[in-house]
Image (cartoon, rainbow, N blue to C red; front, side):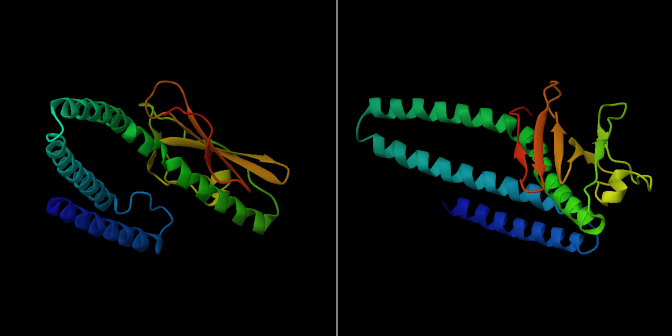
Length: 209
């Protein structure tokens, strides 16, 4: 358990450094999606190692306890453990996909704020076509700068010059809007679709990655 405690301590330190990097970036820019990414990776690795240490210690303790009951109890426990780790492995395989599509939650919230600010100034919401468009390799790269007459420039929000895992659009309906994120990080042709509006926070509409 001492090993797990050390990794938990490291996790806390890395998360604090990540939060500090995010705060420092937000003071000078609104494009901080990648700020402190290295600290975030270290925090995730430390947390994973802490959980593995705890699980290993717990399994060893239960195994010794079941030895008093008999071999059949240890066998059932071993089978249950294998099933559990099989399910955990399947979830781990899709973890990276969920992390990439997860950008849509934060970006749609930022779009809601941008629309609220635009509405406060102009009395209407602003429609924006689906962006960014894929490049020759199929990657979604935001342009470093939009033309002044672009809806995205008018809204004052886009991920300038960076790669995005998703595309975004905004449709306007009278005194409301619908912002959508479209993600296909596993490239299977099935889109993960997220939606948000004036009064509704981001929500996932499809189960795909």
